[in-house]
Length: 324
Image 1 (cartoon, rainbow, N blue to C red):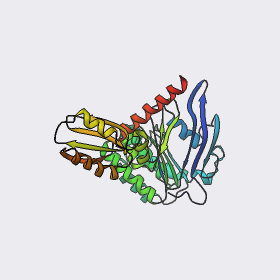
Image 2: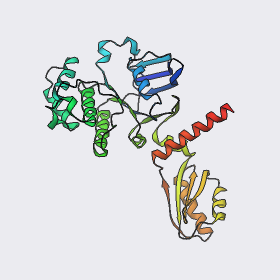
Image 3: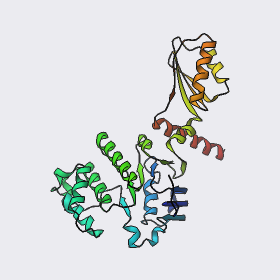
Image 4: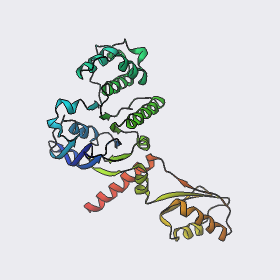
């Protein structure tokens, strides 16, 4: 993911936003390379929307600095704004206009000329073609989100901010959205996507994890976050016989084991290792030397729900340790 000659598309340094005595975003720094999908995940109220509003110029930061497409958001000119798409978390289009009329109006804002084909293309993508003549107030909340997404993509922006684009969307359409996001990325578009669906992390190139107090507690690739959460890669061993305490003690003493070794059920063991590809042959050798019958030994990728929980737990532990 090269950033290109102009550097990162988005750069935030020590970004902080306070509302009175309440801190919504606390000293957040990150860079987004050109053409990347940046996933910004965290629980409700963790500052994801506030961050986007600072990056798009809706909010002025309390402290810190922001650069988006080489400009400060508060100084965006028309040429910069025309290169940015923004889908807000809440529906802000016109309820009394039809689906088609809303997209026509959005296209006119960007000075788009012949736009019928583009509107039809996006209506098919968000599966709203058959609802084109309905007033926006008469379609469901999920449909309104799909309409908002279509409006944010009309003018083929270089950078798109999508705030919870898949909220309220059924799993099949949610997957279609991510397929489309990857298509946009292949065309050179940079995407900043917030989500509470932790599993969507797998579709991103770079992920920022926000805690409830507005801190950015992790920033890395999905694979690196897995490793960071558990201290290495994970291997699952399934024995034919029951796991004995002595087996766990022997595994914990091996030099390639870098983290937790725990029993799973009667015959399974999960262990964290430095490198799964080199650890698995050594596990098999250990089993043969001990006369054990190993049914299988393979690398295991924990679901991102587990990764997210582990990162949050570690962050809480560090905070508690720093305050004691």
